[in-house]
Image (cartoon, rainbow, N blue to C red; front, side, top):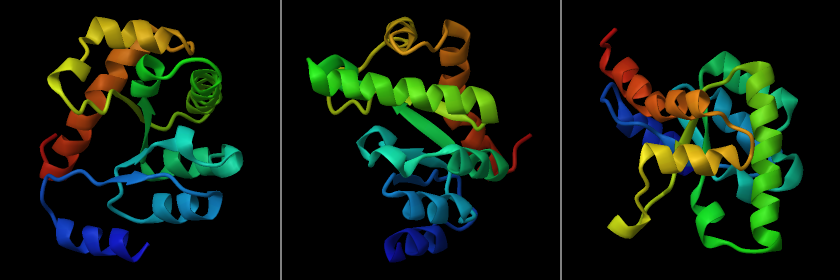
Length: 152
């Protein structure tokens, strides 16, 4: 938590986005309530009850986006992939109910991991996200950056 607060202090009024890896429920609630945190990521790796309806409501109130990581859907097989899909389905239900922003990412580590918007929409369809929702989610990081720069 100290590292996150230090990053918020260093962030200042720049256009940097602050993405925080999810943790347990108390950590997620604390991070979401901090001013300046933009995206909560890796929620599928957090413990099962780490992101609940209470956390979802807080994310909506504070404008913190949730990242849907599509990389595990490409790289994992079997039960681990199924667990990620189940997590994404549950998080998408919460997003539709409470309306917090969300983003879609591949967390590409090389050019081979990059995906086109059409491929991202196809992967997101696996857990029920429509093409229009995927395109909106792809626009969220630029909207957050614009908000930091003060551009309408």
